[in-house]
Image 1 (cartoon, rainbow, N blue to C red):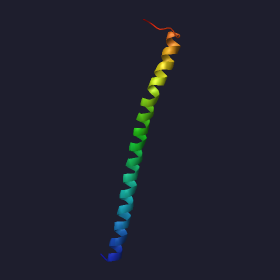
Image 2: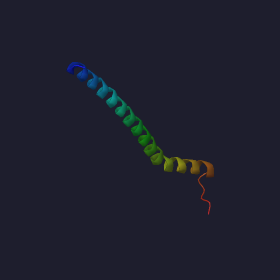
Image 3: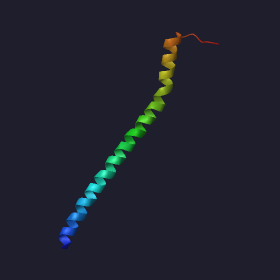
Image 4: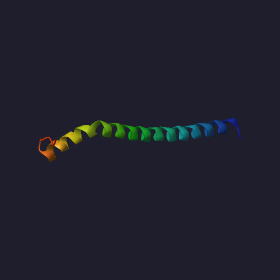
Length: 60
């Protein structure tokens, strides 16, 4: 193979590899963001549901 063909093959392979790595990174970021939002919103949703279901009274 000539140097020009090797250069183009290396460029194409590096583009494909970087696109693959970026897509995996974006998927991981989405999962982490979803987990953080769930953990941040869970206490508020718990309190709202407790107030709605119990009617604001405290059971002791």
